[in-house]
Image (cartoon, rainbow, N blue to C red; front, side, top):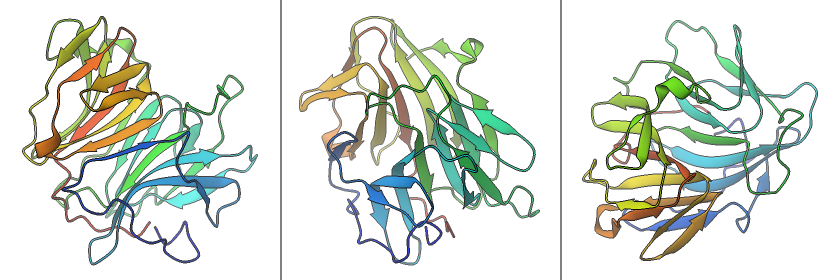
Length: 246
């Protein structure tokens, strides 16, 4: 996190027991010390084990910006992420634990490609750091455009794309093929959701693309979606004590 800010911002949504929702369109965006890169902080915790979740936008920049590739998770919705070996064109999911072999120590972020949507809702990157346990050492680079990765979902008219599993930590995409509701029960500590496409709803309201919701267990509701809705769903990370130098 130190690589993004001249001085650390105050904590944001730091009480994990509180239900929280943020929409990128109405949220507070702030610039970073990296040229053209701005962030919408969803969750920021200080202390001995700092952690952050954020949305990122990058203005057109031929050279891109460089961030440390250390204990982080990226959901690339528009743009390109490159390491020392490969360029990953959206849509991609990248999970990069601390590299003890000192390979691929940095990622270069490039702004969206020529077909990027400029409607202010579709985001470039979801970014999370400090949430990978020390025992979670498997690197993931998954092409989200690979239709063969979709599997039958928890109920009819849904599909899931598993992205990662480790000791109760789950990351996945969920896609609605028709109008249906269901109540996931995967983690006793709660869940985190980012709406990528379509619209999600529960008894608290409706959430369009660009919405981020964190539900502790006491706030769990049934999710309802229409055909075409896609969300990034995550749980099992609320008790993580992973360290980060980003």
